[in-house]
Every structure is written in C-alpha cells, then in structure tokens.
Length: 373
Image (cartoon, rainbow, N blue to C red; front, side, top):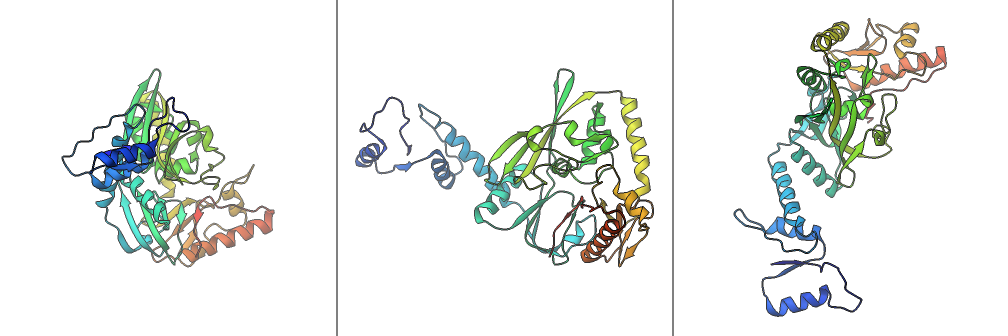
C-alpha cells in the first residue's frame, strides 16, 4: 500500500493532517509506504513494480495520474536500456564534412522515448552530452568531443486533415528531404523549397532553414521541446523567436532538445508540386560533391548582400588549404576531401573572413556551428 498526502478540501490549520494519517496507518498496517509528492509516489512505484502487477489508485484529486506517470517512466527506462553506446567513435564517420576527432561516447537513437530517457539521465548526472541530427551543419574539433554524442534518427510522421489544411507532426530526427517527399506524396504544398537540403527536420527548425523564398518559420505551427529541466513543453512558432537562419534555441536564449515539429500545409496541384521540386533539385545538382564532403553554406548572408558574392569578389573561389577548398561554383560553400582535418576547415574560414573584412569592412558570421578545441 502506498499513501500520498491528504487531498486538501476544507481543512483548517490543526485539523487531522498527513503526519496524523501516517501515525494511524503505521499502528494498523505493516506493509505501508508513504510519498510526500506525486513524483515521489511514481518513483516508488517504478522501482517496486514487477511484471503482472496491477496498480489501483483511489483519489479525490489527481493521484490517479501517478500510475500513468510511473508507467511512462518505466517505458522510457526500458527504451534506454536497449541502446548501444560506442566508445571512442570517430565523428568523421558521421559528419558531412568528413572530419572530427573521436567522441568519448556515441549513440544512435531511433525512438523519441529513448531520446527523452537518455537526455534525462544525462541531465540528472550532470554529464556532458550533445544531441545532433544529420551532422550537416556542425564542425567538430580534431580533438573530438569529451562526452556523449546522441545522433537523433527518430522518424515518426503523422497527417491529420483540418478543414482546408493538413496538420503534420514529424519527429525531429527525420531527414528533411524525406519529409519533403512525404508531403509531396500527400499532395501538400509549402515544403518544395527544401528538396535535397541535407540534415534533419530538427536541425531545420533549430536554424530556421530556408531557400528559394521559403523557410521553416512560414509553415511551422509548434515545436515539442525537452527543456533543460527535463520537462516536455510545447512552444508556438512565435515563441521560438525565429529570425534569419536562427531561433532562440540557436542563439542560446534558452536550452532544450527539439523532439518534433507540427506543420500546417495546404493541398496543392500535384503536377506543380513535383515540377517545382524537380526545378529546385536541378539547381542543386551543381553542388554534387562526388563523394567528397561539405557543410553547405558556411556564412550567413549579411544584410542586403550575399556572402558568396563577397567571397567571390575577394578572389577566393577555388582557394584551398590542405584538404578543404572553396567551391569553384560558389564562394560560400567549402568542399572537403578525404583526410581533411577540422583545423584546415577552421583556417580557411578565418582566412576568408579576414579577406572580406579587409576589402569590404564586413564581418561575416558563420552559419554553421563550430565546436572549438
């Protein structure tokens, strides 16, 4: 028997309270436990329940939620136990840039339950971790990462018709291009601009990805987020504070991990949807790296101008340091070759930035995330 605090109704100070209840129960029952809060009760259940047990809650308040909470936490714990954590795993094996030293630990997660459980465990231990998606927009150091890298490959997807619109909830680890094609298969318009963009839905939300007149902020309705306190909260698109290729998350104004995004798209013309996607995919064919690596656009466009134009005007197309080179066709894209080091990538970034500053007086800001030594 597990007893929680008395549900307050019309009690007055000095009336029969929880301490009195404990005393009376212990005088008459041997197998009784007590919990001051619902969270304590759920924790007690989680450690004591065995397969086949039945939980019955009697409550005048909301104690009926305790069993449900305990069950959810047990599911999360079970999901985390099945994960394989790799030791001293080279980040270069997973990065689009093909560089980055070893991660102390690395794990690939394919379910939201496992992702939540693992993050909460790390938060409780105050241990170092970083959640990543496709590793298409982040440069890790040659020294690697002294902690746990969690590669998010969650991929749940659901469609719900809402009048003239369709509401789509998609897990953050789903590849963005796969999401685009799934929407096209449902004859939904609004995501064609993202065709063939690498990375994941979560990464696209985090950085407010955009191209060819479209961007995440225009179609996103809400985000489900696991915050830095381990709580799952829902934020509206407005609460994400989107800006040009940024969000409050990316700017570090608050912390958390994106679990899923909810979008609303309208039904379109099937022929026009696929025609637009094919047109965009054709434009992106010029960025065929032929087995080499890239992190896409390296710098954010300064207001009223284009980083690629500025870099080209400085004569930096084709400029190479070691095994990283500014693309001949586009000044704002670097291509990496086998054996590349992160330090070479960082050196080329610095050299390009200094050249643009000297010639135009403009400080370029990187669009990619750089983790220093």
